[in-house]
Amino acid sequence: QVQLVESGGGLVQPGGSLRLSCATSRGVFQLATMNWHRQAPGKERELVGSVTRGGTTNFADSVKGRFTISRDNAKNTIYLQMDSLKPEDTAVYYCNIWLGGHGYWGQGTQVTVSS
Image (cartoon, rainbow, N blue to C red; front, side, top):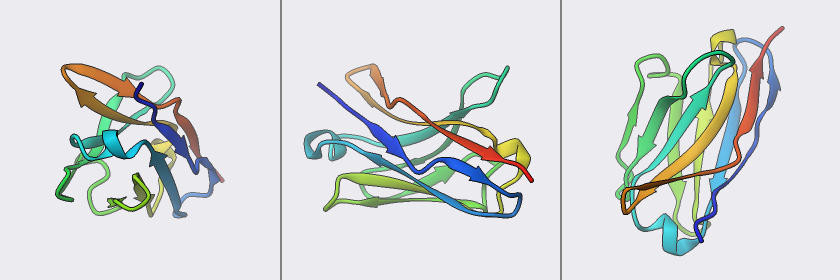
């Protein structure tokens, strides 16, 4: 069974930073590209960024230059470093992996950017 466990969300002021983590098992971690998505209230879920098995990253235009993704192969964990946060970054953030045409998702972690 594929399990993804996110952590690290919380309340932060505009301009602040947060780091989210997504842990999974080693067998899963090595299989495919891993993704971060987010869903704000009343909006559709959107792709924030991705990291391939080789460490190549891609980001949505809305977060480019502010967010980075890294992977720790020893800990089977990926991280989403979010800097210069804006109120519009407020959302539930999910990590995700696609295996055999099936999407697996974590439970999500809430990020709230507010003064």
